[in-house]
Image (cartoon, rainbow, N blue to C red):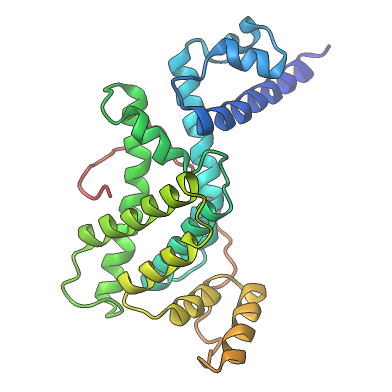
Length: 262
């Protein structure tokens, strides 16, 4: 076996371990994630799993990073094309609702579960979870401030308070979907977000159409025109996004402030 092939196979094994780890941790918690459990799930030796991470804590941190990549791909990336301010804020919220509605993680929101598990347990795992969620909260905060400066939200809007309230809607949505299997919860969450952002639901859909490209816009345009509710111009639609997602990093590699955590 060539060294190049050996390295490639090792990388692939690590990817498979992390994918399995994210799935298990989402449903059963990070604390239940053990070297032995992963080895059994993947038909590997314990030493084969341990060699990639060294300790259980390093395994947990790597799984959190992998989950952050998934969250970025499913929630942050779809909103990246939207213009800053209210349109981007609305697109971020819709992508967040969609992520929960589609159950991207089998156990619901990975970070809601992880935060509940480690919120009172000091250490690197807790700090990493807090750091990653703070990154998202700060982005919401920036878009709220921009929307307020643009006049799309009322003057004097308390950005910290609005981040808190938006996060509360999402926590409620996750709870309703996971515990009660409430299929009407996403629609309720969208209505709540529409009220928080000062817009009727139809206007929220229009802004998402502007932010999401021609295929989605065509679908929404048809639905709204058919109902006679709105006339939609294509002017100002966000260009197709070209940026690559900046990777969310562990708290040890980013400066995490708690000022705007929702």
